[in-house]
Length: 159
Image (cartoon, rainbow, N blue to C red; front, side):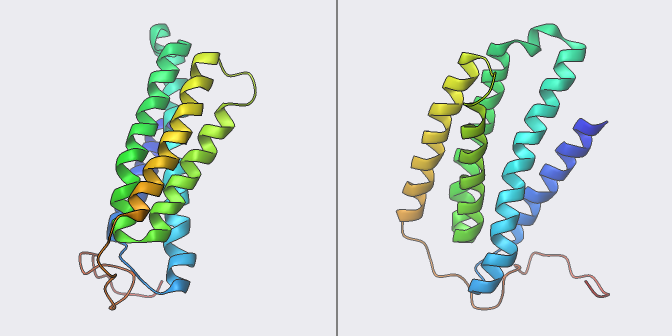
């Protein structure tokens, strides 16, 4: 059940990221950056949760090679998400990219199998390069009407 909770949390953070646009420096620092960081860590945690489920259900999915493929999927997802998020908010995209690089760096330490360490090393570099390239591309100025987009559902009550 925890895998499904992690996957749901990850999906919720990705959805939250798609609702963020521009914002002031304070909004970027206090909302967009933590959203990007949390979304990336939830992607990594969901991958680990999937690996734990695989270890208990299908031994072939729990091999070092399968772990490397799964990590490659997390890296590929980050290579897609970072430019998309950078188009919404620089802090959001940089938070996601930095947390993914941090997670990859962490995988290079400890007792992970060498194939996983190799994917983590090159994956971290790849996410850093994609982040830098996406950051350098011209982007339209953020809208001046606030951090959350008009697509965000309007709800009553206080936060």
